[in-house]
Image (cartoon, rainbow, N blue to C red):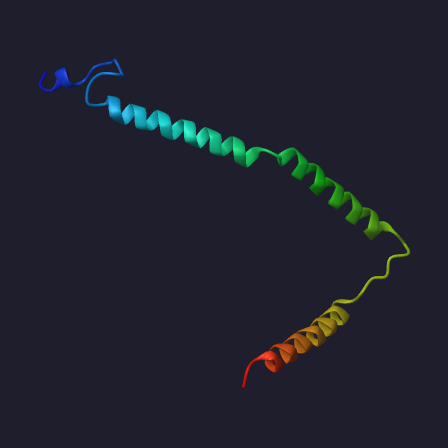
Length: 93
């Protein structure tokens, strides 16, 4: 059993102690990070659900004015041309 004397089950003693401490610190850090990332998800979920409900309500409203895809594209091209003209005119000579 060559080399078995290097392994001990006690994590505070031996060559693996440092690696185990590092792994423990990494796990603690990741747990804190995960908690930080998941904080506030209930509020985000509630906001998202409200937005979907409002969108469905608006889509079902018979008084809502719908625009065709062609009209939306035409308006978008007009806005893009205006933005392009402003950006070209604001560039120094």
